Image 1 (spheres, rainbow, N blue to C red):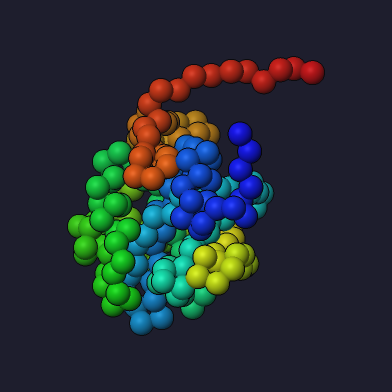
Image 2: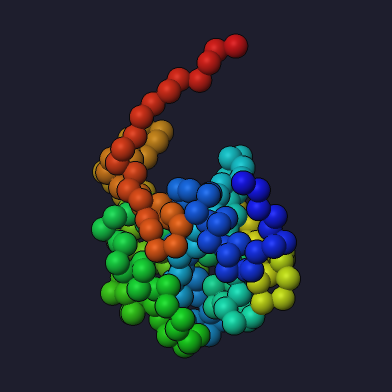
Length: 201
């Protein structure tokens, strides 16, 4: 079976693409507006792209053709924090995905706690076991009309890790219990892990 993307509606394309590219990590992004209002929102079009310096990216779609609070805040302040979504945060994270007006603080909506970051103005999520403070490098625009997206590229300037999560030079995934995004309303746990050594060539 072959499907040409041009034959699909935007919604069909979204469902197909997001059900194939699985599992996806979730960037739980905290920002602050120019007026000092906190914002929290999850994004699963997200990945690291460089290690030295550490650089990551995530994309923010439009809502009814308009830029979301997250991208407007990042463009205004040039800073953001990516918080890791663990199983214990799932319901609170889902609560922040609603279409709230700009004056609403999603920390308050979700019951999560804003904690001062070390090097950037937006707060991190105190309940998150890992967070990455970032400064904006660039924003690139892709797509057409109401379905266009802003690709945010940022450099990690500080890592926050819970005391018990960091082991050696890595995060202990059994303790982190990160959650991944699947298609539609489905998520996955990261408990079922296996290892394979790379071939020595």
